[in-house]
Amino acid sequence: MSDKYRVICSENQQLYPQKIFVDIYPAGNLRPENSLTHDGLLQMRRLINPNVEKLESGIILTDFGHGNIILQYEKTYNRRMQQYQDFLRQRLDPLIIQTFLSMKQHGKDRTIEVSLSNMAVMYDLHKLSEDHHLSAREEALIKQNEQIKKTAEKRRQLIHHHAQNKYASNPHLLLAWRQAKHNGD
Image (tube, rainbow, N blue to C red; front, side):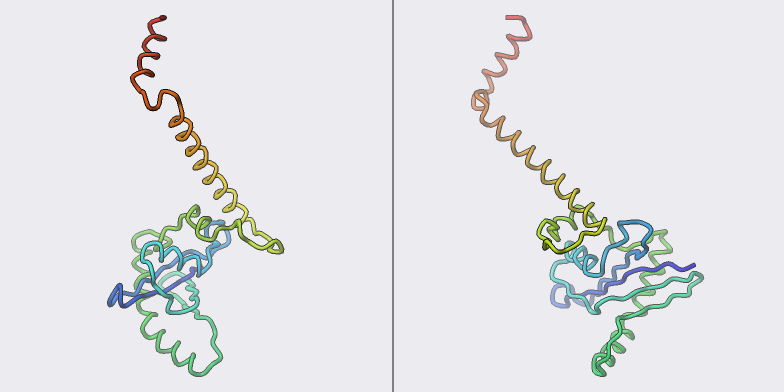
C-alpha cells in the first residue's frame, strides 16, 4: 500500500531570501478535497507568500512506508532541461524528503491547509467555457461559491434596509417607540 502526494516547490529570492517553500498535499482520489492540482497548490501558497514562482512543474511523492519514498518529476525530453532538472533534484530532493518526514512526524498529511471557498473565488468557476464539462469537485465549488455570494448579498441588503429605515438617523425615536410598545402605550 502506498500513499501519493503532490509536491510544489516555490521561491522568490528577492522577497524571501534563502527560502524555498515546499508544499505537500495528498493526491488520493478517496476524498474530493484531495483532488487539488499542482497549480491549485501553488495558488494557495501565493495567498500566504505572494509573488512566489514554482521551481518545477509538478512532483509526485510516493510513500511506501518505512522511509521508502520515491520522487517523480515531470519527464523532460530536452537535454538542457534534463540537466537543469538534475541540478534542481540535487537541491530539492533532500529538502522535500526532510519536509515530508517532519510533516509525518507531526501526524499531518499536508503542509498547507487549502480553503475550498478561497479556491472557488480564486478560480471564479462561473467563467468556465460552455463546452467545459464540470467535474463533481468543480460543481461543489461552484455551489459553495454561489452560497457565499448569496450570503454576502443578503447581508448587504439587510444593512442597506436598516440604513434606509426611517429610524436609522434618529435612534432615539426608535428607542421611544420600542419603550412605548413595551409599556403598552
